[in-house]
Amino acid sequence: MITVISGALAPSIALLSFIYLKDKYEFEPLKLIFKMFIIGAILVFPAYVLERMFQERFIEYQWYASILSIAIIEEFLKWFILYFMMYKHVEFNEPYDGVVYSVSVAIGFATLENIGYLIFNNAAPTFILLRALLPVSGHALFGIIMGYFLGLAKFKNIKQERLFLIISLILPALLHGVYNLILSQRFTEWFYLMLPFLVILWWYGLKKIKLASTLSPFREDKIS
Image (cartoon, rainbow, N blue to C red; front, side, top):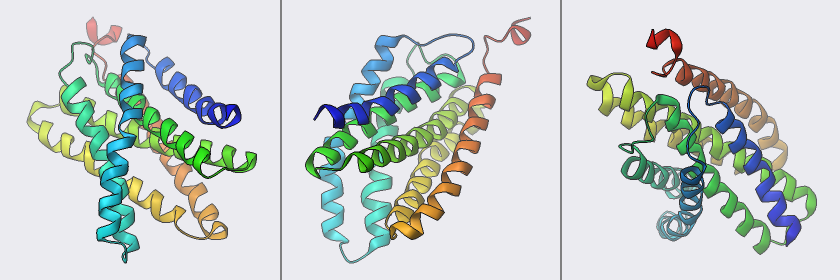
C-alpha cells in the first residue's frame, strides 16, 4: 500500500512543483493550489460513473469508448471546474495562472486515478513505475494546454475569448483521445508510438509555458 501511494504521489509532486516554480512573476497561493488538487482528485468519482455509462452504451466501438467515455468526459469535468471556480477568481491575474491551476486539477485527478488503479489491480513494482509516469505526465500535459488557452481567453484578446475557451476544451480532449488510443494497442506497438507522442507533447507544452510567461502583465518591460 505504501509503495503504491508513494509511486503515485512522487511524480505528481515533482511535476506540480516544476509547474509552480516556472511562475516567474507571482507565485500562486499554495492553499488554493492544494484545493484545486483535491477537487481534481474528487472528479475521479463522477468521471468513473459517466465513463461506465458511455462504455456500456458504446461497448462495441473502441473509438467511442476511448474518445467519448474517457477523453471528453475527463477533460470536460476538469475544464468545467476551472471555468466556474477559477476563471474569474481574483488570483487568476496573469495568463500563466491558467497553467498552474489547470495542472493542479489535472494532476490531482491523475494521482487518485493511479492509486485506485494500482490498488485494485495489485500491480507489480515495475508496472507501478510505468503507470505512475505515463498517466501523470499525460494529464499534466493536457492540463498545460488547457490552462494556456484559458489564459489566452481571459487576457489575450477579448474578441477571441470564446474561440480560445473552445480550444481550451477541444484540444486537450483530442490529444487525450489519441493518447488513449495509443495505450489501447499491444505493448510492442504502443511503446514505440507513445514515446514520440509524449516527446512532441512535452515540446509543445514547454513552448506554451514559455509563451504564457511572456504575456504576464507583471513583466518589468511591460510595466515600464
